[in-house]
Image (tube, rainbow, N blue to C red):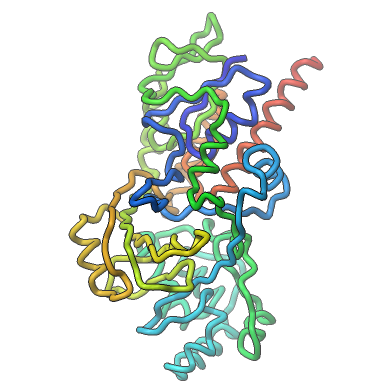
Length: 417
């Protein structure tokens, strides 16, 4: 069986690796190099993550086994403990904010009291009208209004009242009353899967990406412009001259339907309603910091996050990536950087295409319409933009593992018949 995989990001490379021993697999990539949004750029010898900061860990044993046993051995990585901060009302406090109430009390005691009172009085009935409602019911009005609502307005470039809260699963540490009180009388720690993470000993994420791609049949500089199915041969045809028995998609599903011959207009319209954000980043030489990330909810800067990429490295060096949602100019990024003396010198700049899925209030309906259609015509689609979900790198790998199982189960069931 000959399989076409559309896209050579982490998802495409992972499913390619998993299937290539048993099938004739070709990965089609429109860019000149594999890796997708996880690929880094070398600037003065520094590994610059041009679209967000990608690191690896997972709560799933099969994902860890796949990476450490079949891609890059565990001794080729070093482990980092996340040390994140929030610049909040002119002060640096620890992340997550709900565990930093004692720090907030040191500069605004009344706000700290209101946060505690509202957190304990929050009425979480597990029914949420929108993302803002979710924050209010999970954390109380004070934390929602002072931090979560303005920060999420900034990182999504959208009113949280217009967003679906489904993306937050496994993305935010959610405290219960016990852990909240532990943070008040002692210490409580973030126990999310990425509170510790692995980074390659080479100090370059491309080491992992290139190992994932090793041995795979990747055809670069091939943009998919048309997809059709030929009934008499039972073959999929890409760009009128490439023939396959099966297609696995990882490219954005807001663009895929318009490439498919005779795709219903209603499906194309639903796909076009799926929204995403671009992201602008800038690499900086900086002053020293011990942090791995710094979050910036205040409106006095366009940046919403600092990724202290130099602290992912061993030995550590003073470099940071600033990130802003949307398409910002070099001048905007550098001028905003000048407001913070921590940022010393800009070194490079990038604007992405697809970076983050937007979970607006129409996203579920339109996503399901597109996915149901692709399933009906037997095109598998996985990954962040293939499933239109806010997936980290490990969840993209998990999707690939699950698809491999599905494909083999289907083959076995057909053979038994």
